[in-house]
Image 1 (cartoon, one colour):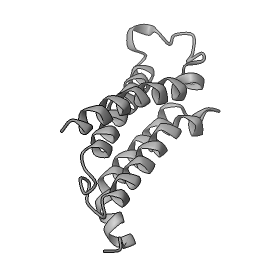
Image 2 (spheres, helix red, strand yellow):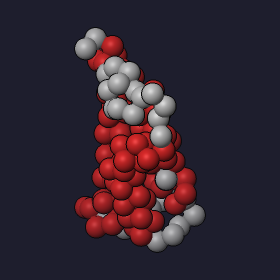
Image 3 (cartoon, rainbow, N blue to C red):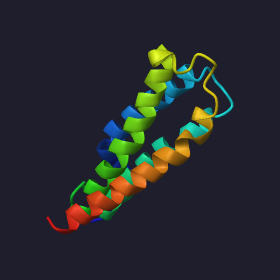
Length: 131
């Protein structure tokens, strides 16, 4: 059965809504700073991995097994969790850690989140292999 774009769009819609909302929030927190688009890279990777999972599964999340779905969840939790937490901390100036400005936080945050997400993806992949 060929995967239609409508099926892909319906299946990936929750991921798209979440990542678009997070991207808009990241933009507002950073006030359109110079590193906004760099901080959207982990969000784009979540969407790309989700689309790959659905395509590989023939329109279903678990159609090709549990490796990719658990890998995507393993990537999304540390990558988006860390990015969201640090954006929240910056937005409320948690414990005055950003009293002198964000420094290089947003410049290097995507690298940290992608590495953390990669580790989470590997763990999810391994767990999915054993399910």
